[in-house]
Amino acid sequence: MQSVIIQPVREDDFETWLLLWKEYQRFYDINIPETVTLQTWARLLDPAEPMHALLAWHGDQVLGFAHSVYHRSTWTSADNCYLQDLFVANAARGHGIGRALIEHVYAQAKQNAAARVHWLTHETNHTGRQLYDRVAQRSGFIQYRKALT
Image (cartoon, rainbow, N blue to C red; front, side, top):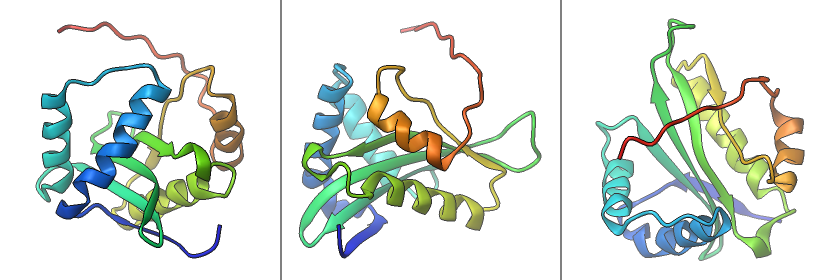
């Protein structure tokens, strides 16, 4: 897809971002409470927070987003960058938007002297995994978690 622009979210992007955020939740069959969504948005805009968001635009249409979180690591002296959420609108898939967003996160992480970028995806996300296998190395680690709330 020609002339895709990737840029950090701005305060007036909320409604546009929210539409994709809701699509993302449908894709993963989850329902994030509105209070968490609003808190997430506030954190994404706060320069004191380690959370960041990018939007991919084609003209006035948003095609996808990437959310990243910088955090400390016991394995490196530099921070790591966790690519927490990556989503491309269904109609825009297969046009390099996901790759462009990942590459932009890589560039930002390098600029911020991060040691690595890492992320998770669901095992059933076959289309996403085809891209991820081309742009990163699979770690071999299996995630375990326990909800506390």
